[in-house]
Length: 318
Image (cartoon, rainbow, N blue to C red; front, side):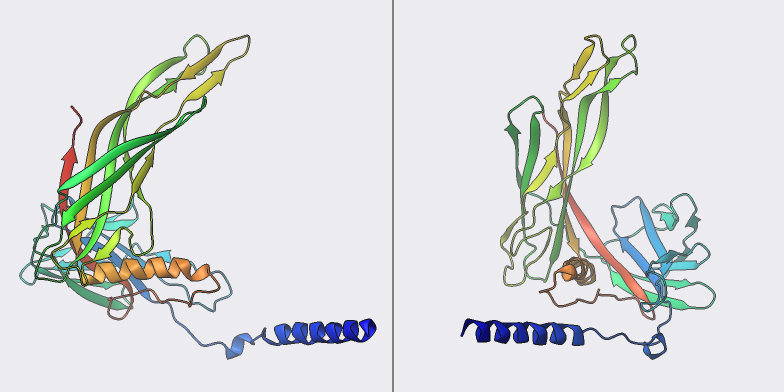
């Protein structure tokens, strides 16, 4: 009886392996769908930004011989218009994108803007409207947590709240920066080793929880108070240096908060859809999640042209 059961299980295993192998089919390259490269445009405009940036690239065919990698385009003609004025956005070779100062072409709340991009062979366009109203953080909680030991790990946490703009559909994104002053080592020998105070700006990272991340909408929540996810920033840690012969130096950062900048973006729907679709696409590596297409509003191409309005609150410790 045991022998018969063993033979039966082996047969099932063989069938299973055969079934798995049959799911993988090699398709000749000639039978793959023909795809062409498309212009990709990314630009997000806001009245508060000192410059308007436009990134222009071209997509790589999905079924090419090499891995698909977007290629930046330097020689495109980029035009932006508010309906009455138009400007050509010049190329910035240092940052490999197109940019124009707000002094030359300001972005205003409530206005509709259009963008046209051409590389001589292909032309794409899009438009968006800057939200009128601001959502400003009204309260916040800043705290720190510690872990014991020599290499003390200090985490700064942040939560903020704001009131929804009532009577209209809204989409939000939160952002925060912390300006820190702290000590760093300076010098490469025992004789010239010392501490030096510097200042840097750090971005706060947001914890994603079910139903809440740094992109939120007021669907069924009109007029309510919104709360950001928990923001975290790991503060500079203790560093030790051993030059030998008992010459050991320990540098404590003694971090000091100069200011905390808290921002709420009131975005258009396009901005929200595009970034949410990017999040969904990143999760497509999960075999249990269906593949997701990235949202685009670029006519004839790919990418996104969208707008937002920034409400800001700055905290300066006394």
